[in-house]
Length: 251
Image (cartoon, rainbow, N blue to C red):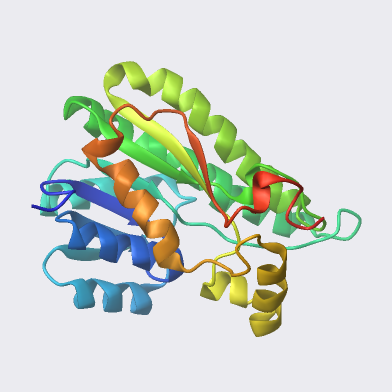
């Protein structure tokens, strides 16, 4: 039997990188997965690769109405939502003095508001279903600082705080809420900011001397979605090769 047999999950940002790895891992462990993303072509390809256990939905995490549609479509196609992998996010670097306000607001809308709306959208169905697991994607930048990351880190610290508040509020209803804090993971999003050179630099800063791959993170998402983590609530777990064991990543 799979570790997620009978579980029904929504994975945001599920079309590429970490999200695609999470979607594949969930399906491999017996879950039925709704892949929610703005990247329609890539998302449909991942769903087709997985097969009948997966379904793609075009989704903007910053839009409350879009969240309602995703939850309704998930319930209609597979059943009540048990797991929300709040994985969607964007990365932007910018100095405090020069970063455009529009970039700051975009980070907030996608990373922070998107996570809040996701929790809000699934709470009712999870409560009626007797509980569930919400996994919020923060970052090592939600645990420590890094130059040129003030706006991005603000959203990731916010996710960390929201997770703990939600764990307190929703725990009595059987809904567990935890945050995952990846370090540098080799994905299209991180490669967009420096390519191979960025990966090599990142590896030089990691005690394990390598950057992570999406599968390094997906295994933790499986654990947090499963009943194996039934007493884990409000936790923050770094998947970073040891970067946050000491100083900040950019130190």
